[in-house]
Image 1 (tube, helix red, strand yellow):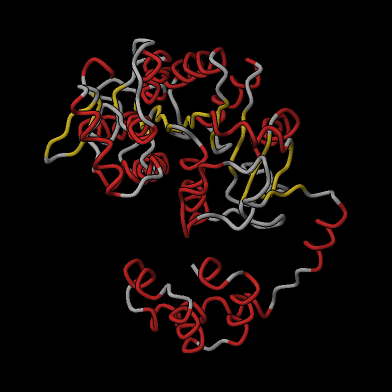
Image 2: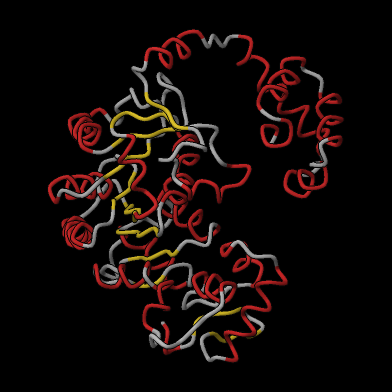
Length: 363
């Protein structure tokens, strides 16, 4: 938030001063106070608490090794103006990382705008591994990159199958890209770095911690067109990733498993609570992510205006609020309402108090 409101140099300068009141005044002067208050609550208290957390870390922080590494070219990194910056990260708003560190191919990172996140339990079953292999094989044949977290279980199976299929695969790490964690997956992570990429918002040397795993899940969801969960416990990191995907208006799919299997309890929960579409194979997942391409199914003589096309691209078979559609389509609320009304007249969309969705003929 401070970076966006004040710019990085001014923000770090005021944080180093350590005055919550000075920070608050600067935010108000920049016109971000109302927006920040609506998200974080009482700003004076939040800023004071934040400074208490930041000050000790700033005092002990020496940027020299990082700067030396950047200048030497040994460590790859991306900023949000780089051509290979994953555009999906922009949807995170204030939660967008300042930069991405890369161990591997920067070009592979550039392929994430056409990617699917495949996540699941670290203690997967033979069924889960089989489903993962079938799915990733189908995604590979269709030219999709595969994103996961480099962990044991489903993550590892997804990466291995992508490598074997010749698909681009990217692992989003919870520590620095030089910290190959877990150690048991070191050989796999090295393969990913050689043929795809390891990425992280954390600088080299940063150690993976529990809260950092939860923090990185938003990146997995954001860089991908959709998130697919294959086996997940009732409470798991995969459920957290699915939640981030849903909040970002990304499609979420979940594979069902045996009703008696604790490994699939989280998937069944997502499906039952209508937070994920039930998918049973690669074709279902491909349909999930290509749902925004309904225009290609229209008669060639049909003409749709620019606003209507953007609104139609933002619709899915699930009812969605106008505000979410507007944000996803890059339209104002008024433009989205006008476009949706036009699409409804042409029987391409339907709306109700629950939201808007594509008509049955365009699902």
